[in-house]
Image 1: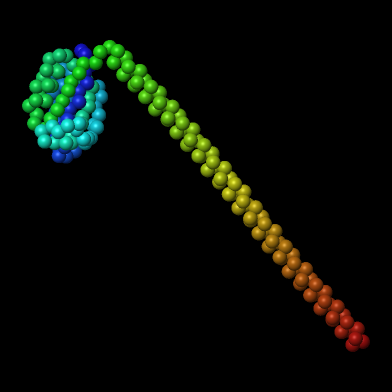
Image 2: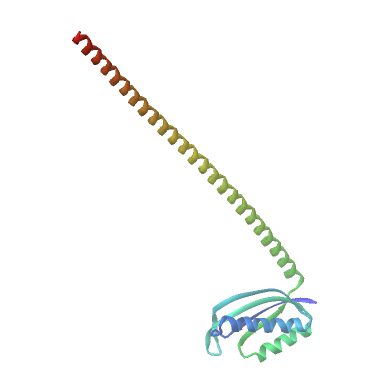
Length: 182
């Protein structure tokens, strides 16, 4: 089997469900004729380079598949029969292009893996920062509590000293009063 790419343009006024239905219908044509879908991309609604059937826009669908020549003939016949398909092209990929696609796919896989590693590092760093912030907040809270306790103890000590001073003054007054009475 050989590898092919195809791009077809659908009417711009089709809804998402209609587009999905046509895509699955076309994929089924390839698969029913012994082919295998490798990749599919919905490029969406885009402006055409020139007017086609009085339309300036179209919905682009790209897909890559493996198939025999008979399946490609059947696919092209169905493209012509399906009224919603305004334009299409099917090309066979040569060995150089296949090699280039494999290298590109490998690079994309490596880039995704590197991105995942970076994301994991970022997540770990954020967790460490959050943990450090929590520890710092806890430390500050403990310091505030300790400071509050010290202030409270100092206040209580001052109150006790004041009470003791008052008691001493009362005793002195009583003693003075007693001595004055005698």
